[in-house]
Amino acid sequence: MMIYVGNIAYSMTPDDLKELFAPFGNVLSVKIIADKTSGRSKGYGFVEMEKDEDGQKAISALNDTQVKGRNIKVNNAFRKDDSKTEGKQKD
Image (cartoon, rainbow, N blue to C red):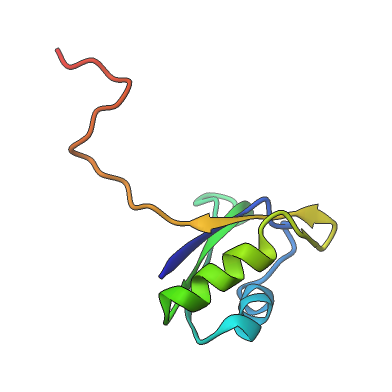
């Protein structure tokens, strides 16, 4: 299960994020999104958990909790679907 984690502190590392989610189950991968030119964190990332039920537990427990002085947002990550054009008009 892929989980979106938003509003994370810019100082947060992938290891910090993994430690935060580890009590809920096996963490397969962690990625913090960084600006391509500066390399600075954009303040959000993704955590992949092995089991969906563990991911749901983590979402329920961690959403809107304070981590490093910021209230993080934790929810299901949805992949972009390029075939949809919501809000855009086709020519």
